[in-house]
Image (tube, rainbow, N blue to C red):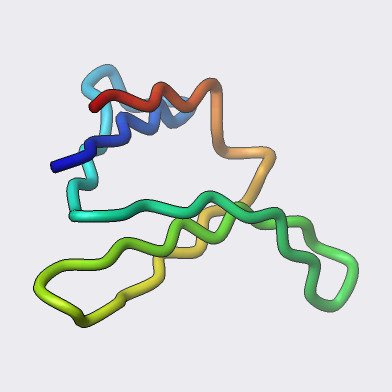
Length: 62
């Protein structure tokens, strides 16, 4: 199982996302840039969109 830790501005603890597979994509909508973090669990996928300006760093772990 893979894991991603997303460190956001103004929040001390990282947000953790885990899944069988994780894709991190850059996405732009209406002039605002986002990270799309798409994760798969048991054959189903979900996506989380986070504005790029709110992210300090992203750490991928296996």
